[in-house]
Length: 327
Image 1: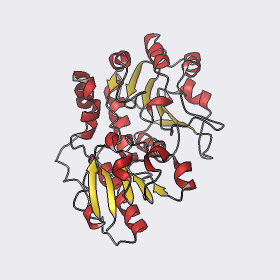
Image 2: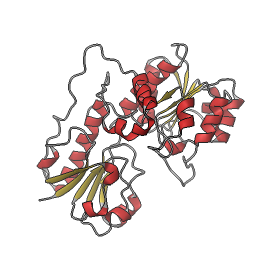
Image 3: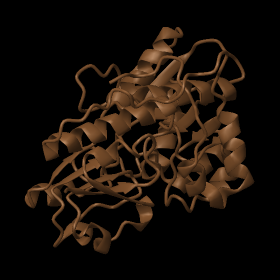
Image 4: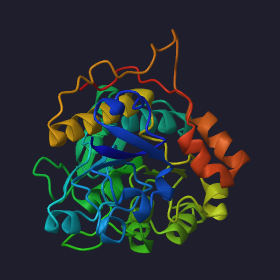
């Protein structure tokens, strides 16, 4: 019987995954070599670094991460060793769009549409653009890898009322995103006449924390909405204090997005194992009438206890989307 190691914070997965084989559930940060040695597949989140240090000498043949991002997977090592892998592209794109829209609405002094600058036009950036465009916003999108991007980086930085990051974290190539939001980045913003809201719901290290703090202090940005942080879960107290909205990496954590990610991860593992599996029933409970997401509740929870960053993520309360993504 196949053996699966599964991050115990992945929702809606218990009792369904058992149809694929024997399952062991562990906190993502605590998954070790001794746990995976006799496993056939892993289902993880961003808290598990999957590389040769974890998998060398194991019989793992497939890794699924129930997330859009996959920078925690050493994909080159996995592919070189014949280990299949998958992420869950688009699973929580509409959830992040909901978060950005709600955070901007809670931060801006006016509800009038303006100009939204998006850096990164993948699944998430596209969903954010669609949401704001439907509300009457002008969209400027920069992505050096997308032919349908509509602006240069300089135009996004100098002409936007809100600038939001939706890139993967990369350290090499022609356009690395590590510390993209640097002193130079904010100096370019300062050359324009606007003082935008800065949003990071991508990866924490896409921003240089001291540079963000300096931009807030200098009034280069009017406010900062920070969901992803450098050195999570050990976030900078000074940025927590300076941010207008601070949340514990939960932008993509709607119940709907989580359910879709769980379905996609389980379906991928089932295909790898050659086991038929129906995942269509995996879904959150119905959304209460009149429900609206308020990011300030997540902000308040983090400010009350920053040391509980991981606990707040692992035990995140139900959050619904008005128009959820379906698989």
